[in-house]
Figure 1 (cartoon, rainbow, N blue to C red):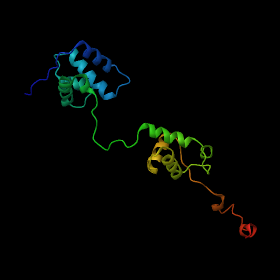
Figure 2 (figure 1 turned 180 degrees about the vertical axis):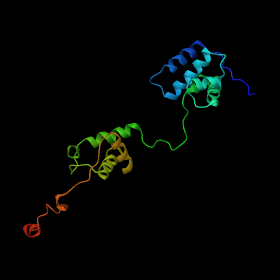
Figure 3 (figure 1 turned 120 degrees about the horizontal axis):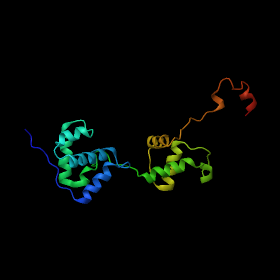
Figure 4 (figure 1 turned 120 degrees about the vertical axis):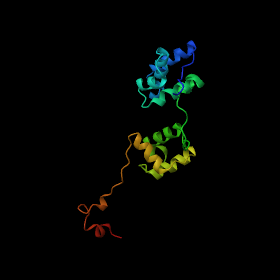
Length: 173
């Protein structure tokens, strides 16, 4: 039979922080669940950590035990999410804000000789103004997430029903 994991003694500050986290509404949901686990084990020392984990909503018996171990070793900081592997963030939120701000302004008001933004024009303007290169796909993603929709430019010239059959003659040389 595996050894039963016991919760170490907590300082008054740790207890206060665990209670705050367990009732938190602004913390990540995973952190709140882990704090609830520690709070449950603190209130019910007779219950095994694996069973306490199930009672607070973890999906497996091992989760409760693992989080109590990590709390015992690292304290309240051990309940926080660790950085996940993957590519680091390329652009900061400041760059993203500048992109949205620039896209919301009329190019003519900024001294550009055109009336509408295209992704390419926006890309060039960002490079000129801030020295930042952002790919077109990233621009599209960010602006779409902000609720800005890009539309294709349309021309009356391509509409066959509206095309004047005498256009060439009327236009002249």
